[in-house]
Length: 251
Image (cartoon, rainbow, N blue to C red; front, top):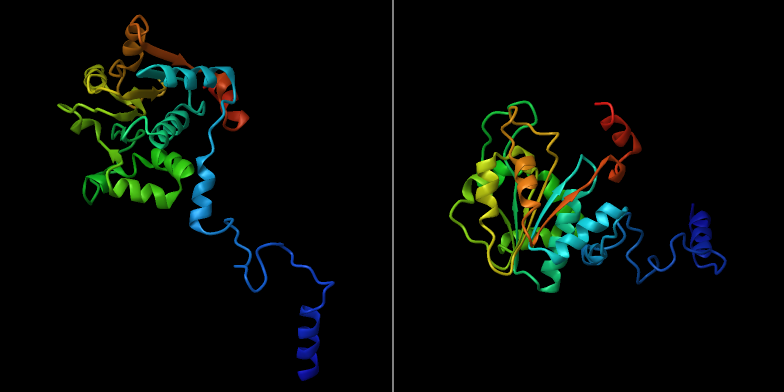
């Protein structure tokens, strides 16, 4: 056993033996990390800018940069929410706004899960999971927790938005197809000075009863208003699995 151990030590010091992952092993290294290093280095990698994958996504991104109010309509998988969240993070990082306000109707997708325990944030967490996922992808989980703790990123349920004026903020209203006409009108009139608001939704995929969703009607009316952009994405703009686009043509 002693001879075998000495051979192992000699082999470890042999100059012909090279580390499998150069630069991160050895006495001063930290060893291989499947996540690419520590949290700080990993968080910095999320600061890259998002590039449009098709012409309509580029039109949407340009509209957000040049308009204070944008309505983004399109089927599932076209990147509406992700582009809105990415634009919000870029505006926050550049100092154009002081905070990000996220809102989403608390509507279940066809089934009721009953009352949820906890405070307001815990009750809203299941409904806001898609927004959290996009924010985590752009900021990293550590920075997201810090920004939510100090109020830089705020979760505002639709039912609690009445009476507010959102100044110096980037506001994202997701799943707006699950809001009534009166709710969307109330949300739109929250827009304050030096703020940007983006409504996203798919009028063909509402969880409300027939003729209750106000998104399509609101978008049609706002198209005639100067200074407001209405971006319409189609099945050709879907960036998820190709089968998603194929299914939506027959479903």
